[in-house]
Image 1 (cartoon, rainbow, N blue to C red):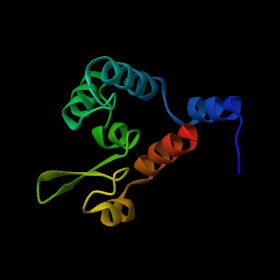
Image 2: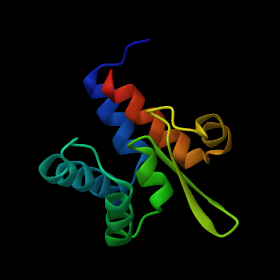
Image 3: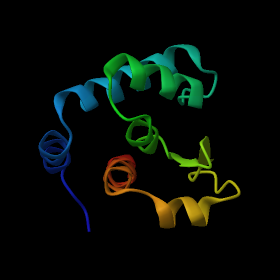
Image 4: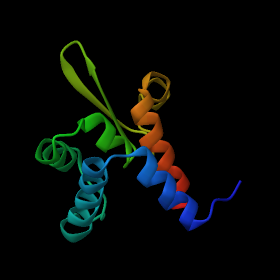
Length: 109
């Protein structure tokens, strides 16, 4: 199934609030400017989630970085690179993580 750029933009605006969209864009722009890979690091995701006061788990999912708390510790898994724990991260992700990851996968194609 193929979606038009307009349909993707409309869905993005409908699903994600203004603060989340601003955090997503700011994180992506910052990463493109300073990261050699052009992709956000986990510390960068944490920083922008705090700055925009949104859940870091949702922001991370926009970039394939899945976060969950396990025994009081943050557990991050890079599902785009199929890091160890990818299957569990995908199985245990929240609805908001699923929507953010799904949007990213849809928009990149």
